[in-house]
Length: 111
Image 1 (cartoon, rainbow, N blue to C red):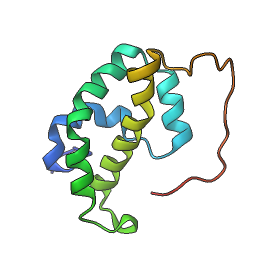
Image 2 (image 1 turned 45 degrees about the vertical axis):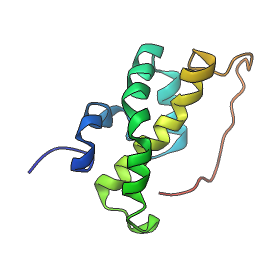
Image 3 (image 1 turned 60 degrees about the vertical axis):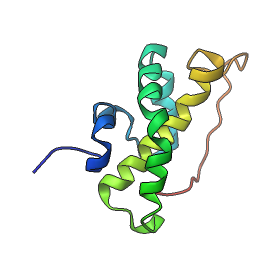
């Protein structure tokens, strides 16, 4: 039995799984704020070419019946989205010129 968090097809992303398979948006946002640009860039560079493959893989399952490893993959994709603007546009973890602004979401889509 393997300790991998992701489906076998995404073994190349496994080094990022423990850190970025985060099940909730507030926790993903916190992870982004607590990450360096070097860490986010490495994750982004590894995940970017695989996102389309990940979405194709995930489309094989009903959203509310994802196997555990597939759900982890979905969370990894959500984390990729969370770091994409800091990597592509802002070049810093926080939104530029937003001060200490923060948005609390009480409900979010699942899984």
